Structure formats: structure tokens, C-alpha cells
Length: 122
Image 1 (cartoon, rainbow, N blue to C red):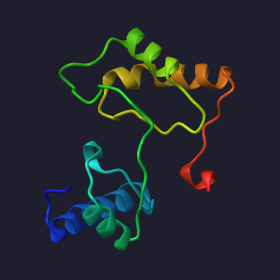
Image 2 (image 1 turned 30 degrees about the vertical axis):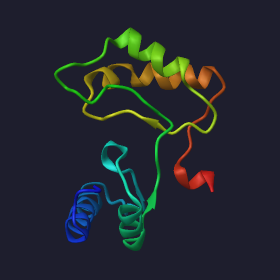
Image 3 (image 1 turned 90 degrees about the horizontal axis):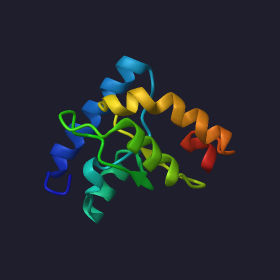
């Protein structure tokens, strides 16, 4: 986003907002900068649009649909790095994540972790 103009950022964010509202009936209030790339300017712009920026505390290379990580290695990496207050970034286009998410959630819960919405962390 740092390379975009203010009007381009406004257009992209509001287009996404409208799509999410139409498809899921949900009003976005949080935003994660694509690739984690931001500047003071982009943070100010998204804040002026009513969004709170939230970054992740864990991510791994799962976004490339043509180079998906091994499921067992991915599961181990995720579980080995789980921590209190974690905001885990798992890309929805990852077939690996689709295949292991249920077991990740179950194992994390068995380890004593619970899942909450961002609203519950105020």
C-alpha cells in the first residue's frame, strides 16, 4: 500500500469493504496491510476510513498456490510457534491450510489455547 496514492488506497479498501459486506453481511473494522507493508501515511489513511490496523504475530510461507508447504511440516511449524495472544496469519488460498486447519484448532485447544475474536481482546 505504501506505493499507492490516497485515492487508490481509498478505492481498494472501500471496494473490499463493500464486497465483504455483500458476501458475508459483515462490516469490516480491522485491516491487515497486504504483505505487512505500510507507512505512517497509509496507517493514517486507513484510520481515517474507520479501520484499526492489526498485524500478525505468526505467519509462514503458505500463500503460493503453486508451491504449497508439506502438511506435516506446516502443522509442526504452526504448533511449535503457537503462543498466548497470537494473531495467526493463514492464507485462505492455501490447500495445505485447508487440509490441516481442523487438526490445528483441535490440537491448540488440547494444549489449553482458546480462540477469540479481535473484539474480545480490548
